[in-house]
Length: 261
Image 1 (cartoon, rainbow, N blue to C red):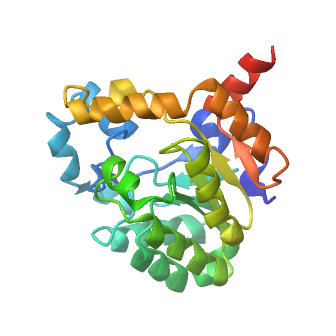
Image 2: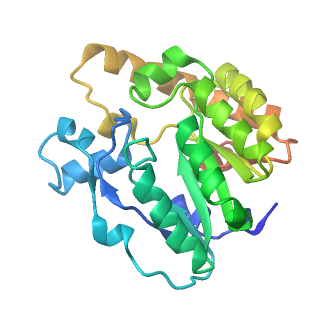
């Protein structure tokens, strides 16, 4: 494992990095479970969920003069990398990396964007790790939960591309978009192209982030809760416990602690 995935004492984002950074408000991927959209609504940064898809680049954030920071910077965390913002994303990454920083690039990846990042930042690849969110191998499942994000097939193609071009690669299977069987199939599909770690976690706070007034949403939430009940999580842990690349997120660690005490 690289320094990107050294053991950290923090929880949540601190499991992955010492610093988080973003350059825009809003995200066109419009994932139903998005924590950033929920926070923007809570703190009245947007008036409605629909407003979240209107992305606004913060130019001052793009043009920040970076110095070297200890540890890892995770970028982005409250929006994604898309064909619409790839130019300011690369400008931001270049500024971070030239200053000597190590950057964890987190995305539900568009293949075109990853190809461009790999080409333009190839000389700085030792300071980069990609961490791609792939919560399911099933395009029908991702189309519901992540309606405007790339398909699982495209995300795995982006992962393979980065891997073959010599970049450090990792995967986040948080949130899992299904249960035991989907998790195993997704794990098997990404494992060959991961140099470092595969992080697995449950779907968190889904009832406070998804509009439950829509009947089908409620049906899907109940389905997720059933598939990710404690007994199924322990079953998954037991199946993958000897896989050296697997790391468990807080939500699964809590189940493990509860069920072993």
